[in-house]
Image 1 (cartoon, helix red, strand yellow):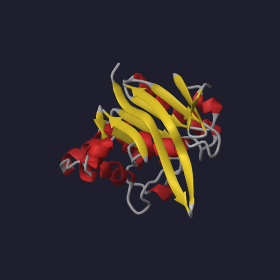
Image 2 (cartoon, rainbow, N blue to C red):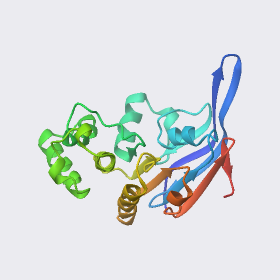
Image 3 (cartoon, rainbow, N blue to C red):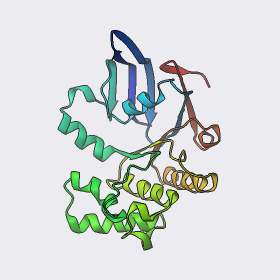
Image 4 (cartoon, one colour):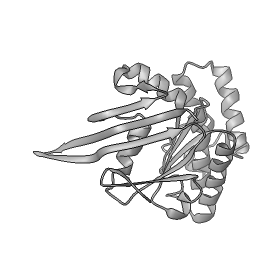
Length: 224
């Protein structure tokens, strides 16, 4: 299998006053095409920083992050945003939907940044909301939807540009267990259809759905 995202000896250091805080300390991670990987770790382990690196949302202090074999540090900001937008779809714990626009418009938004024509955006967003069983809710704003429905909108939005990778940060963290199971079923279905899934979670019962578990402690991987 081909490598989609690869982290090589990645360090991330933040300055806290005069103190250097190392969030990542030489993290190595290789995400292969078609994998379902859970990234776990206790609070303060560096898993949130690792998620930012996996999602190519930040640059390492030291080390390299490769997206489809390209060193992201060598890409301009606009070029990286364009490639990231096509390659990675994001699902967040707090949904991160825009409350003033409809579910349909939220799903259409990532396609705007890729320059897709409006007619195609409308068609694809409608199809994606039907895929997550929200075809009758396309005109509703997030405040008119339940938590589970909002997360399904977020899943539809993550698929907008048909990305290779779905990166889910605590995707069931704000949901009750029954609704969480529904969301995990959607993610497993997407994996079965060939999507690469990377899921950051602290919940072992959620992580068991993945095919591989990566444990992070003190900013680097450890054996589970």
